[in-house]
Length: 217
Image: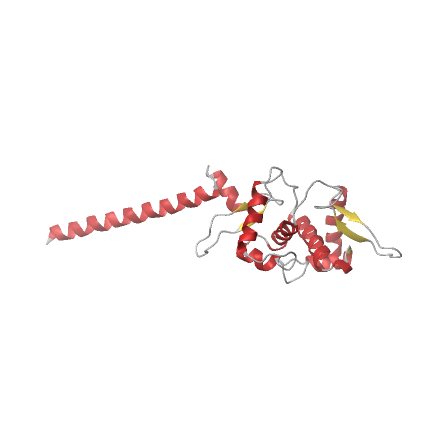
């Protein structure tokens, strides 16, 4: 099972991973920089408005769980923080550069399609084709120490299914499908079958009404 995170913990971890890759010269992050990263209006969904006290409380909790480490540079009086979430000597969780970028984007932006992930995660790791993203997602879903990602039912009007990370728990759509006694895919199929059955019943009723009108003539 993946490490369990709250929504705010996921935002802090996602920001630390992102800044480690995207702006290594500014990493580790001070509390002020980390708060700004958590509240960033770009590359975030949802957009948050956390204050430093709230972020510090989250960081303190993550440090107790050994998922974040305070590490200040030489001569620095300001505490700075780095993640121990993955790809470090302090834990067993390992992802490829592409897998790390995908997990990071899912933590920061929520569920996304492979196409969206290719566009967003390409700033953190080389991802030239959607097929590369799909291969990484399959790996993240089927690893023996996972799963870390789940495929959601395709929504009406969308050509692709979205994928969600599992570090903050099962997404609502997956929970709903599980409550119905089926997988997300089967749940979507069952909903479609129900709609078809309703339409067929309506057509049959209209036919009966039409026949009744003919008999009255």
